[in-house]
Amino acid sequence: MMTIETVGAVLLWCTVINYGVLLLWFLVFVGAHDWLHRLHGRWFRLSAEHFDALHYAGMSLFKVGILLLNLVPYLALRLIG
Image (tube, rainbow, N blue to C red; front, side, top):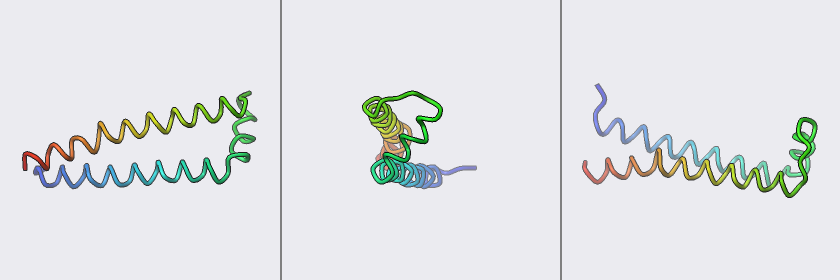
């Protein structure tokens, strides 16, 4: 049986891990932008502007998902606990 403390700990670690993934995505995108664009260019014909916009939108959506699905429930549990 999971307690509120256990669920809170799981949500906190999910938040930390997901922000780590987001940070890694950002660092790879910034540090290896040209290589990443060439790699994806093998499968999709994307201009650099479209490539950047897709990654920016993806990172934004991922960040909103982290906030809504991990951080907000964690904070709600902390408030009631």
